[in-house]
Each structure stands twice: as C-alpha cells, then as structure tokens.
Image (cartoon, rainbow, N blue to C red; front, side, top):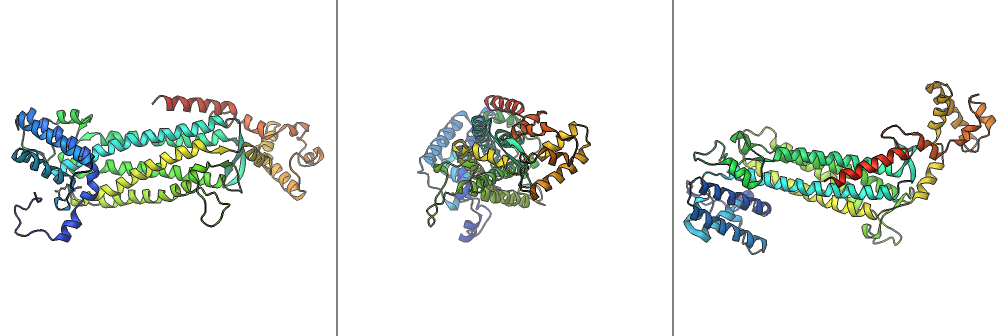
Length: 457
Ligand code: ARG
C-alpha cells in the first residue's frame, strides 16, 4: 500500500520519498502506535462502528505485528513513509479489507499526537527513576563521609569550611527539583488527543473517555485543533532535560576539578575513568567530561524544537515531524548520563585528609574572626575591616592565624583575647547551625530528610 496516491497522477519523486520519510526514526514509536491502534479498534467495536469480530481480528493482527517488530523481523519500508503507514499496511496484508477499517474516525495527526504523548509519559517515568538512583548514590556518598570537612568556595576561591556531605546534598536538592519538573511535565503530557481527527474532530459516535482509560490517561483534550497542533509537552521535557543536564554538568565540572592533582579531593574508580593512548600516567575523567560536553546538545535540542514551533500556524503542519529526533536524542542522552553518573558517584573515593588540609591552609577562618569580634560588640563592617588588616599583616609575615601572637592580634583590636585560638575549622562549621547551614546537626537533619524523600517513592 503506497500512501495516499488517490488524487495524484504521478508517483512521488524518489528523493521526495526519502526527504519526507520518518520511518527511520519514528519506528521507535511502534509500541505506542500499536497500543493506540488496539485501543482505537476496541473503542470502534464498543461503539458499534465496526463489529466485535472485526475488532478482534485487527487486535490479533496488531499483536502479531508487534511481535514481528520485537523479534526484528518486520520489514520496514521507506516507501510507506512513517510508522503508522508501515503498521497499517502490514495489517491490511494480514487481515485484508477488515484492516482498512481501522483508520475510521482517526487521522495520522491525532495518531502521532497520541504516540508522542505516550512516549513522553514513558520517558518521564524512566527519567524520574534514574534521577532518584543518582540522588541515592549522592546520598550514600554523603552519608559515608558525613564528618569530612572541605573548603567551600565562592568565585572558585576558598571561602569558608563546609561539610563535604553538605556540598553533595546541594546536588541532591537540585535533582529533587528536577524530579518535580518532570512530574509537572507529566501532568501536561497526560492528556489523550485521539478523536481529534485531522483537526476538526470526527463525525462518529466515538467514546474518548474509554480511549483515555484504555491508554492510561487521566484526561482527554478539550480542543481538537490544539490537540493536533501543540507539542508544548515535548518542549517541557526538553526544558526540564536541559536544566537537569545543566545540573549534571556542574557536578561533572566539580568531579573533574576534584580528581585533578591540584585538588586531589576525590579519586574516581578505575572502572569510571580512561587512560591516555600516549601518556602512561594519565587517569582521565572522561565520563564527567562527556556529560559536560553533551549538555550542549541537549540545549541545542531544546532550541531546535522551540524554533520549529515558533510562528507555526494552526493546526497540524509537517514541520511537527521534526519534534522526534531531537527528543529521542535528549531522552537517550539524559538517561545514559544519569545512569553512568550514579555508578561514578557511588564508586568515588573521597579523600578526607586532603580536603581537611585544604581548609587548614590559608585564611579560610577570616569570617569566623570577624564574627568573633562582632560577638564582642564590634559592628560587623568594622570587624570585617579589622580582620582584613590582620590577614594582610599575616600574609606579609608569612604566618597563619594560629602562628600570630596575641600581641599581634591586639595591635589590630583590643577585643582580641586568648580565646581567639579556639577558633578552628571544626568550630567554624559547628557554629553555622541555622536551618540549612553546614553545622553537623543541620547536615544530619538534611541527610535524614533526603533519605525519607528517596525512600518514599
Ligand atoms: N510523520 C508525521 C509526524 O511525525 C505523522 C503525521 C503525518 N500527517 C500528515 N498529514 N502528513 O508528524
């Protein structure tokens, strides 16, 4: 069966067939397409638009077509343009005239809208599952190193000491919002478009609620023109995927930095690193680098679909066929990145001695000295300036805070006393006990809350 040659006098140019065919990539939707057709056939029978016998034949044939596809023995053909025509043509081959009745009260326009919605719902399910796996890996690594201290950074300059677990839990929070974003996206994808026809609806007594129930949708679309025109649920997936990849690329960047000799904060497992073909000593964080790199293509995919949809007149236009490859690419990229990250994080070894040493070098406790003066009644701005002078003095004399004598302290402020020496990295961390801070008590609370979140799903 060649597609739709009824009103044409000529065969389509071969290159036009190739240019317009989508079967190479939309065959990926076969399960969703067949599920939609089975539900549609059952609905047509229930509404006495076709007979029960006819529906049964159609459903049986569709099921065996699905088997052929699963076994890889289905002969896809470019000439049949897309997944819908490939399946329908095989159906007619199998059951003859009865197969020609399946497309009653349906258009490929509402059919593809349905397939895409089913696909996006499934992709969201898988994405959320993998996001949670990575959250668990981060949480396990944080719990296993819950007492370790590292320098916290701003401007990539050592700023204040923090618990390593606190830093990791920041990523947990980002991923938690990613999960929420995908849940929101699911709400919008979870609308059943079948029954919209080409654009105007169909002139048959169909039961759309039945279709929604059969196909696991919680709502039906309210406007047939909107239902065949829009792909905002695809854009939402792409946007949520871009944000998630942005988060992963930040984690990637930190793992790359931390595993360098310059930082030496973590060691990535051999199974998650690669060697150099030239330099025998190299152990490269390629997984993290590729994730950082792949973020670009996911952003590109978002921009591609936004641009395709921009200024597109209602309702269906063939441009919409361009929604697929970029979506599949983002889904594949995000799922594989999440998957490999969970393993990489789970097997990473944190080097607590190194991170602690990094907090003990330099003047990371300067804010704590200022806070010390504030507690003795010095206004914060003045305390800030006093400690600034003290840091300058210490640098010039190549001394750490610990190595400065009490006279040196006192020459900057009379409020300094011997108890200034009890300010340590540990006391600094412990002091930041307001909710959400880095104090062990707060981090313990965060860890427990995080555990409840991943275990409640
Ligand atoms: N391959 C098309 C798509 O992906 C399916 C719908 C085609 N409809 C049409 N009237 N040509 O959007």
